Length: 401
Image (cartoon, rainbow, N blue to C red):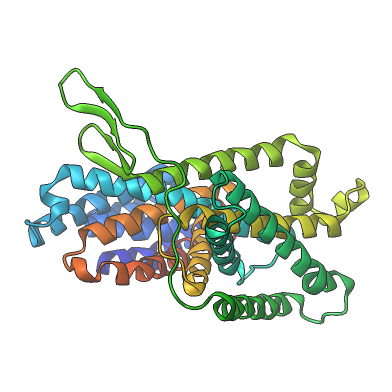
């Protein structure tokens, strides 16, 4: 850690003194210092090579390997050390949940890239989506309907809520009547978050709710040549290679999220409206000259962002117990993801969601005190956010905050 700090402080100064590219100097110096100490830092300062992503990736992998060895020596009886199948299951479930996090974060990224504001009510739309699915699933009118109908209901409700909020409270930012529009957006979205949380609690109460599995798996056994099961499914879970187990609700939620992500990419890159949204995100004035109405695109972007958050919650209400308070950690997690991936970057939001999901799964499974594992989940996001802001403020693909 000491040499990582030294590398992060000294390396940018060395590169700046020699008029070299310093964009990767802090991150590269920190990674190389933490991985190799003075053995790597001294040649780095003497020869000052161009620090590409390959250098940083190699140093990062070496740090992970060193930490893994240190963890194994410190706690040799931990399941993450003794049971490879457990590790594989945790990482697989991390990827599965990370895909859903990515869907939620993409909604916030879409809002930021078009409107230029961070919606602190994003997690409340996530909460509303889950609540809509639950109450449709227990209502006399929709309880026997296909779960896709419940998802459609969540999408419509959250989209209309997002559109209405943008028209009533955010549209005024473009009229010049607001002296500080960015600060106004923060305050008004915070206000919406509190209103939605407490209004929902007043309407439905504070008791946790949860839906049944959307789609039970059929019983299926596909043996491999080595006699272990290649794929084995029951109504409750899917098991791969007789080692990796994925619960049915998580797998179903991730599959739905993947389909939604593909549909979103098709919409943004293949339709005129999607291309118009991307044009407005790049240059609103040029888009207006080309005949695109920026106000309409702003409304559409906020509605779609709210809808993506709502659909994320709609898929996860079968996985987690749902409360009106679930929106607060969801907003924090989405913000961590978009900062990690890069503000306004769609690929960055996807990769950031996967990484956060993996870190949460690994941390929850490998922490020695399993009784308190879930309590540490918010801390992982804060650590990721802190390291990102210190080492690479631009995130993976974005620009500096």
